[in-house]
Length: 627
Image (tube, rainbow, N blue to C red; front, side):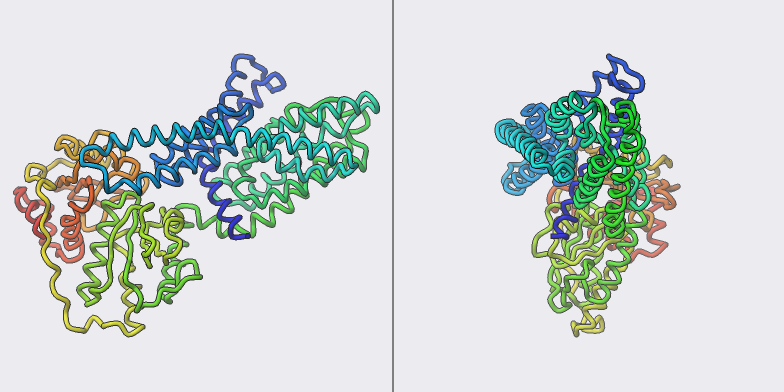
């Protein structure tokens, strides 16, 4: 159960965290310009409603679909989310978290089913129409089915809250109120249930505790403070700003995503809410009117005479209890959260993976792949056409050279990793996606697809279980492969180019791919985006820029261009002299990838220098096509 909740939290986090900036923007606009805000402005306040109803749910829906199936999944997820938005009158954040991933799953299943059946040249037509038709169908389903379900949920929660109040168990009402707030039903409960009850009580006793049950900023404050102190990554960095918007601006929605990405924190806000209501009833607190928005300032402005101490105490107690419970959960999962962050955290995960692999254990610590049973190793990257293909070719060449010819090593795009893959090698920045796509496999994460110790890890394990040693009879040479016609044209080998920036070199390679009819123009933007995410420099003075998975649909046919820069192009701290632009459709380009692996593994400095400086395009053409 705990593992399932953690997986759900990570998935929700992947949808919410990339869009926290939009939530903060909406929170500032709301706090500033609504009639009860700091700088009331009727014109600017018109931004509040459309942002809450349309912008934020659509961003979440798109991101949810993108997490499942890249840009294509995001588009279908956003279309489906528009249906749930139209079908209800409240901000449909939870609906977006349902429809967005559902859109990604549906279009992924469709693509998996038809990818081998589409006639050549019709790929873009099928891709565009399938996304539009399936997205439209999901939008209709959202209006007709999901919207009414949310309306029913709202009514049921309102009835349940009213029943608890009538039973005289007022503090326990937070058990329903706090989760309902996280579902963005806070306004419906506050104004639909508590405001009528509060107005009646004010007429009788001059104040009402009902006005401060939902509006108490304490439970949310506790969560945000815990993230500020004990969180990791983006959550920790953005929480202090959210504290200001929540506590002084009264925009409680700002903390909801922080709870959604770690669902166990619902217990923290429930405990804080119960404590706050109990304190109110014990000390006789209450407001004379609704506090809208639910900021500390608004609460103080609406506090009944003689109830200031009680109301402040209720906020402090609620925040303290929520903070204490939140801290336990956040600290308990800090290591796992850190492992999902890029950069240093991913490198640490990579190190642990390598240590585990060297002992014959999976990165998760729960799976073991016996050396004698290793039959299938998958290299996985975002698009599956360049970096992973090169890494797979290099590993396959090493294994076959040492006699391990019975092991299959192939490259795949993440999202298409076969379920019978026993070991999956992927870049550390793609770690979580790779794990989600192939949970059955052992995972090894690398910083560089060609310069890594994957071969050492695997060959050492094979030796330990008695597999044929490298000293055995040498394996036969791999049969020569024939390069498909038109993949590399002699006129697409350019030599003697003047040094330019990395971006200019990649763009030049992409434009040559476009000019030769291999790709459509959007593919070039995907090449630049890929480079911003993960460097395509592979070592030995060679870079292989290619598009990310989101633009793979713009590949018309397989093609490669080779561009020589004798003085080099800087790729960070490295210098590339050969820029090999790749547009892969199917396996037609893998002959050149195999030759690239040979170049990076076996060419000496003299041979490489000739490749860097030759003025004869035929030399490079032969090197890439004949090995």
